[in-house]
Amino acid sequence: MVSVGVIGAGLMGTTHARTLATAVPGAELTAISDTVSEQAERLAHEVAVDRVYGDAPELIHDPGVDAVIIASTAPTHEEFALACLQAGKPVLCEKPLAATAAAARQVLDAEAALGRRLVQVGFMRRFDPGYRELKAALDGGAIGAPLIAYSTHRAPTVPDAFDSEMVITDTVVHDVDTIRWMLGQEMTGVTVLAGRPTSQAPAGVHDPQMVVFECSGGVLVHVEAFVRAQYGYDIRCEVVGEAGTLTLSPPATALVHRDGHATVDLPQRFQERFADAYIAELTAWIASIADGTPVGASAWDGHAATVICEAAVESQKTHRPVAIDLSDKPSLYAAQPEELLVAGH
Ligand code: ISE
Image: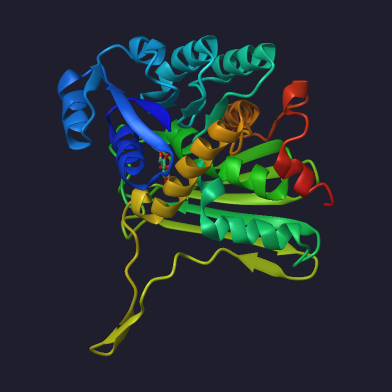
């Protein structure tokens, strides 16, 4: 049994704690921390955990905690991930790995200096059955060499505080990781375009945004991020190759024919759309701790996503294409399994 402590009792901490408590073999949820004590107590009560901390480092250093999930706010990730590395404990850190590229580099360098991988970053789409099938088909040569990819990321609503920068750092960051993983190519350049904003956006906020990435293998990637799309949580992906195209199928739902209409329910929240992915992510993470083989997005991937998003924010502000340099990869991350798989492209 791997005994897990969860830092942060907000939205993602609650999602992970519920999943761990009910759906992940080999895991035992033993501790929760949050700086807001009522929040920590509420979640601990719900999932029947009796070790509750106000201070995350205390949870990390609890000898009864084998592994840690960081689901607190982004600015805390660097400190807590470094503490987990210091304590030698495996850690699943929610995205982003850290709030800035410089902070993510600190975590990456600390893990590289340790010489073994303890960090997984919470990019759950890598565990979504649809994305996995799409990647397997691509890797199997189903459409030949990929040329262009489209990634659409729409959410119904966000709080007013969700600004233009967050559309990149909180939303597009997922598309960045998914595309790097799926194509096995690095991103080398980015251009962000913001056109007419929706009337739902606060004054001055760019929503939707169109982002174009160039990849090391020449693939062009078009990402649409629209976080006030109102009608539902709508995630799409298409890869165009030399010999065909691959399209992400949405999770199977029933089509209801009634009163002259054929309708299908759309998910309204990302927790619903990616529920299977979250279970698979935690299940694979726990299994990897038991057998010592890290899976999922690494600290390198987390760092890369942060660097890429910073370049995109620069492009958003300067209205110019921005080059991305990710040439300084520590040797610890030289042969990630995904890259070996797509070496043929
Ligand atoms: C949100 O910020 C997330 O992190 C979710 O995982 C993602 O699916 C959602 O679309 C984002 O806006």
